[in-house]
Amino acid sequence: MSMVDDGTGRGNDAVDEPGWEVDPDDESGAAVGRQIKTWREAAGLRAGELGSLLGYGEDLIYKVEGGSRIPRPEFMDAVDVAVGAGGKLAAMKPDLAEVRYPKKIRDLAKLEAKAVELAAYGSHNLHGLLQTEEYARALLGTRRPILTPDELERAVAGRMARHSIFDRSPAPELCFVQEEASLRRPIGGDAIWRRQLENLLRIGELPFVDIQVMPTSRWDHPGTGGRIQVLKFTDGSAVGRADDEFAGRPISHPKQLRILELGFGSIRARALTPEESQAFIVQVLGET
Image (cartoon, rainbow, N blue to C red; front, side, top):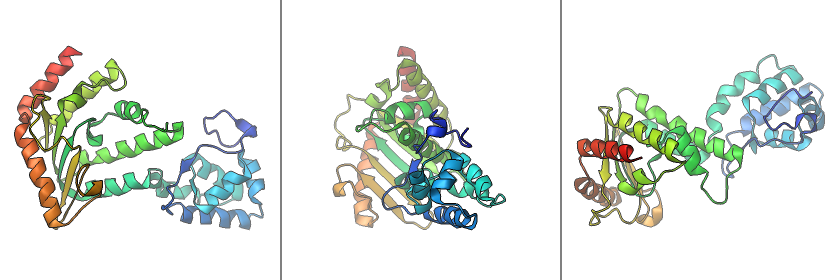
C-alpha cells in the first residue's frame, strides 16, 4: 500500500500526482527540492527507489527535487520517514504553505497585506476579496481552458488566503464599487449566489469597509472600460491597475496613478452610497 494517499485513488500504481505546478518564472520550491535530494542521496536511494517507497513515479521525484513541482504536506511527511530525516524535511511544510499559491496571487497578496487603502471597481464579477469560497470555486471553474482540479483548488486557496486583510490591525480602508450586474449574476446557482449576497452584507457592516453599487441605469461614468484598482501604502507610494489604461499593466507613476484615482472618484460619486447599497443588496437577496 502506498505511504501517501493523494486522493486520486491510484495507490501503488501511481506514477505521478497533480501536485502544485510552479509558474515558469517562480523558483520558490527549488530550496525544498534540493533538501529532499540531499537527504535522498545521503540515504543511498535512487529517485526511482524513493518513488517506489512513496507510491509515486521517478519522474515526480525529479520534478520535486528540481523545484518544478511543489510537494504536498503529506508528501513531505512521507519522504521524511523514507530518508530518515528525523523530522527535518517535515518541518519545512510551513515554508511550502505560501508557495502553493500561484506566484501572481502571492505577489498581489503581499501588496494587499501592506496597503493602508484599497479602492476597487468591478464591472463583471465581484472583487476577489468579497467572494466566498464556493462562489470563487464556481467562478474560477468557468475559465477556459478549464483548470484541472488541482489548479482550481490552488487558485481558490490563494484567493481565500488574501482575505486575511480583513483581520489586520490596524485595519486598512477598503472601498469597493460593484456594478449591479455583478450582484445579479447567479454564479454557482441560486444557493451559492444567496450566500454570496449575505456575505456582502456582512462585509459591508465592517467599519473600515465601504461597498457601493453602481446601478445599471447609470451609464455615464468612466468605468465602462473595465476594472480599476488602486492600493496605497504607508510611505505614500501607491500602485494601480485598470483594464483599459496603460495596456492593463500595474503602474506606480504619480501622474498615471492620478488618472486612475480621478476615474475611480468619478465612479464612486455616481454609485449608490454605502447605506443605499446595503439596502439594494437586501433587495436583490429578497428577489432570489
